Length: 566
Image (cartoon, one colour):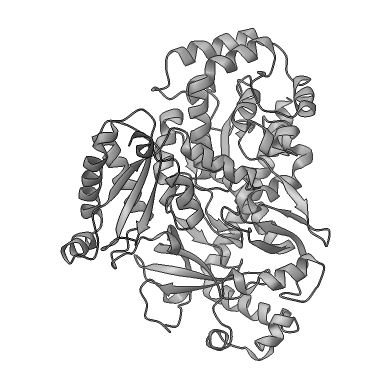
């Protein structure tokens, strides 16, 4: 690969990222005015849409009038409108030109489909793709180094389909790369057949992505959407490195690997035997993986990017076993509905809200029914708020059900951390146990019993009196099933320290003791593959932590190991 061309694209990406950071600084310095202008423009532009006429956008002049006239909404309020837009109707929710539609991961039921305007796509392109490169370039400069040519292991695969109106429907995370398809070979090691697969359900992606990255000595970054994908990929490598080295030596793709025949034939034309590189890799792999493997096999790797902050930080910590202390760009805060906040530094959990990319309201957690949501100038540092979004694409006062904590301000724009989703809070007796609490307690319990966790989830069982938590765990190694009750007691001890309300709930008899169920090996990977078989994009699928649907509960309950032992 021509290093000059690779460097040219990296430099251009870093330049665009730097420009967008400067623009964000200007917007943030007057974020209050920007927010009022965004709302005013949305009311003016969309007053003659069906939704705008229904709620009188033409007469709305202030934030208070907007809040009084337009109700809080969820996706079910928009599904019929979006269906009509997918069939070609215009001026339904917005007059802005809708270029594409984004699709949620669809882990349960039918996925959400969100219209995307050209302006939204430009913000996404700049901040999800160029801005991370800009942060990396800044980090290298501060270390007195120049950023090397950027070509790396990119775990993302992009799939799409057409709506009845001819528009493309895809996951939000893949859209920037769809626009860059002609040049993607210059910054990603995976060829087009892997980056843009026709049949993800019949492809062993961990193997195929590693198969094209491992022979390349000059890999300079690792990229993903959710950090767990990288962690599981390196775990796969740890368990299958001998096969991979043999295949690199012989210039083949192992016959055991799932891959459509036409894709396999095409990929085989792009590889050749490389016994020298295979032996280099074997030497490092034989030393084990406890010393970070990434710097040993790819000395040029300088940074990592992928969502791994806040509620996903535990997976970022686990990834360090493979990457060491490489700096990480945590991507920022976004959803299928909009990209809303970005970090300005590597290794930062804090994200600056993008005041020009939507109108934001904030409802204090535990606020009484009927409380008027706050605007960005009314927020307090250290407080938690439910975010309510009005985006540029036709969603008004939309409850994303995410809770953000304000950690500071960048100019007038709030700096936030994602804390948890409202539907991922366990609240049997008013104790409000968050995902982070479960993460901490589950991991510490496993440590105390001397094993690592492949996965874990919790279910609020209200069928008993009092209700209690059921903790499902999948150990990476065999454990003594007879110790499940002992594990439950240790988990409760940790939980009591993590959540001060637990002891009160136990004391009043409104919360029972936790029950631990041990899962069969491979359960969480089977769950991921079941989502994939149903059309979900695994780059969007976050680890399932709260079993909040009958379908999820049934899946894991059917794979409990104790049931076989009774």
